[in-house]
Image 1 (cartoon, rainbow, N blue to C red):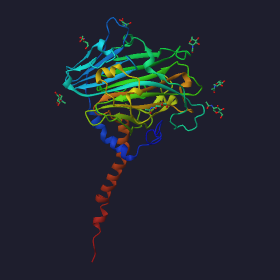
Image 2 (image 1 turned 180 degrees about the vertical axis):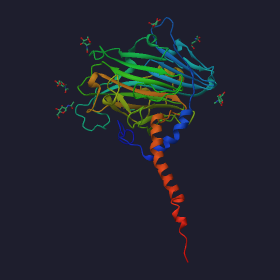
Image 3 (image 1 turned 30 degrees about the horizontal axis):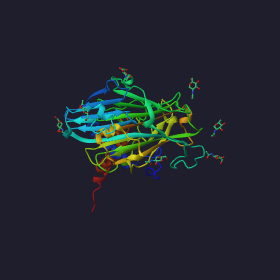
Length: 405
Ligand SMILES: *[C@@H]1O[C@H](CO)[C@@H](O)[C@H](O)[C@H]1NC(C)=O
Ligand SMILES: *[C@@H]1O[C@H](CO)[C@@H](O)[C@H](O)[C@H]1NC(C)=O
Ligand SMILES: *[C@@H]1O[C@H](CO)[C@@H](O)[C@H](O)[C@H]1NC(C)=O
Ligand SMILES: *[C@@H]1O[C@H](CO)[C@@H](O)[C@H](O)[C@H]1NC(C)=O
Ligand SMILES: *[C@@H]1O[C@H](CO)[C@@H](O)[C@H](O)[C@H]1NC(C)=O
Ligand SMILES: *[C@@H]1O[C@H](CO)[C@@H](O)[C@H](O)[C@H]1NC(C)=O
Ligand SMILES: *[C@@H]1O[C@H](CO)[C@@H](O)[C@H](O)[C@H]1NC(C)=O
């Protein structure tokens, strides 16, 4: 199946044209103005007396809006994103309803008429492909598929132990409930989520620019035994939005900058028009914890297609909020190529994305690079100006030639 337009992923493969550079230069000042802060809190919502049904509520309150991110592993890992136009909206959870066979109403954000936008992502399956004989690195799927791991059939550790109020982060760590081959005996799949009180950029690649309106997800597979010598992995993601249309997948040029030392594409999933939601990521994954150039692998995304709900693992969290709505879309992410770095290096793979509402953050050039460009573009302009002045005011001699009759 056709993936994104162009083979433009990886490190330094697409140089920005002058128009791009100029438009970035133009965009830089306005991007610097977008400084908004939010009061962010993380709360694990417990089902008193039950087993650990992990539900993490991230509430980000601004002056006149509240964002609710509800992450959970009741069913496959899922997140609900609800944006409201009041600083006072709250999440209400009815566990008996949420865990019933008809969960609709088990999760609500009140008051209901304050909701401006809502969407959901569900991580349904982990794929593994045998890349040994794959010659066409762009082929989809990138090799013979092994039976996928259904993430609905994972068991997840108690998220309470991982909540870190200092970094506003928490981790859901899981492994298959039944693991006959022991592939996950020493391994896990982890979903680390992090919220932010203001905009900034983490130290770890891919160094996505975040704002107070966004929440970051890092998915990491580590220590699991691959089923082949050259195993490639993939992730199936289902989406649900406010309308029946699938979110659109867009590739944007990003910039070569000290923040991301290569020109990258920035991929994003957008739901309709504003106020809307987005998922944004650089098409790169890493095969080492300390991600860097040497461990970067391309990440390909297939465009989202409408998918029948019954083909996907059902998420009680999503059904508790949206009801039995059926306009799911799904897309696949695949990581790496049979050549180049891969999971086989260190039995490690990580990929990050940002989720949010409003306009997706736009990379601005760092002040250092901006300074260099001003100097670089400025010097020829000064020379031109000086040349022009010289011609205009130039050697006094010209005007002194008088016609001699
Ligand atoms: C989860 O961990 C928290 C604290 O780390 C603990 O209070 C709680 O009882 C645990 N929940 C379950 C169901 O084990
Ligand atoms: C939010 O509040 C600010 C300041 O109080 C105001 O300028 C802005 O228009 C408000 N935005 C919305 C969407 O109501
Ligand atoms: C939860 O939902 C059930 C079923 O609708 C209802 O009977 C119960 O009162 C609700 N519990 C709370 C705390 O609202
Ligand atoms: C890979 O290719 C070799 C030689 O062509 C063949 O013997 C082997 O069965 C292939 N393996 C797979 C997994 O297709
Ligand atoms: C898991 O780790 C233990 C101890 O490090 C090791 O002996 C065992 O072989 C590992 N199992 C797998 C499946 O990698
Ligand atoms: C994997 O590598 C090992 C050792 O390099 C080799 O013995 C084995 O045949 C390989 N397996 C496959 C399926 O290629
Ligand atoms: C994702 O990939 C798997 C395995 O190649 C395939 O069965 C499935 O249909 C794909 N899903 C989408 C939405 O492309």
